[in-house]
Image (tube, rainbow, N blue to C red):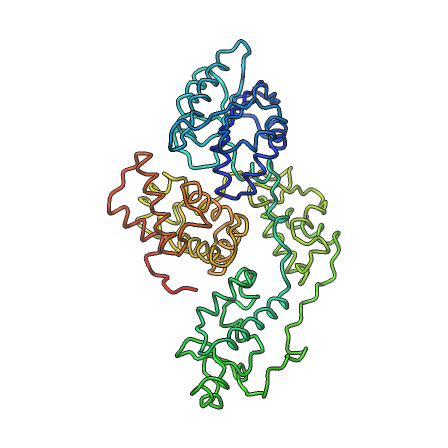
Length: 526
């Protein structure tokens, strides 16, 4: 299959950089890597013929030399013809789109017959030329690292999934990128030290919200591990050896009754009702390290071998009538072999351990940010994400049909209001507590939803965040409080409706706002 590839460098580089600067740099520095993936791994577009193999005969990269001169060398080494498209206006507008359109038409009319035209750009200006290619019975493949219109998407025979491109073509593995998780004992020790430091340095009681934010910001793994496995911030405080510090529920603060006027009088009184007997009470003469027996001991891993785990996985897959999520298998293994997650038999992560196993009649398939285990003779993996059944959501809320129409304009799934609120809450917390990373933030969002007992997948979190980022939200610079994120999300959806010609009025806007905030019914939720 003869293919011609046209890359709008500025558009793709900028779009990937919104997700992560590392993605953009890998795209620009290693075009040979993703080009090899394009040729050897990416499926051909529909109608290309059985067994079609790409031969990318035309490779053109359109680049602004004023802004991106330093990235030329990688594309030159990958055999690209580089077309310089310098700024033509004071605002920095280039002529990339017209150069690409003219070149596509020239290649279409060339003596050599090209079966497939591959366009790397999210610019909807290419919609007419894609339609022309379809009329000429040519196959079209499109990659967009940004928001696209429905009409542009509909003109392509194959749309390259951005997550597949990032993780397969660029080689990013969120498991490998994540730093090793600290032990719970280490987290508890860090939390204890920080609480003591803040109380010792304060001239007045330390407000609990300030204490919460300080611990979450300076020890990011604490909220990510469900407050070191304690469930809530208050439960974490109760578990620490902090005597004689105590929590004053009226002040909503932590204090040292030995130093603060008036507080010492209350110290000998009965333990506050909010705390268990003996917790944060007593008045030792000085702070002492807790006895070894008072520290939670790490749970030892039950005896396990790779063969036992492989056998267990085979049994789970054999007993299922559909592919089994890899995350579900991790839960099964943890339950059978408690403590194994400490180092996953020396592999460091569940994914690496899983890839080292060879269970009989089990194949592992990774799609986007998730994986499934399946029996290739009995199971078929549906690549589309499995959103909540619209009928179930509609049955619970009479406004669901109207909201679904609005969400469809921006290609977001119809989820219950509580799930959208929880995702935006999780996003706000994640951006407060840790440096931005697409993988880490979507995991935090998913975990936050699960702590609230809401079944939201990592893929659904990714779709929401990617929609916001591709429509101008900057995770590192834009306001990201919960109310800010609600306003941004609703604004993106409304703009998409206006762009796609979906009717929307003030009543629809109000309904959308209430949907994203769960009608205000979850105010104050932790």
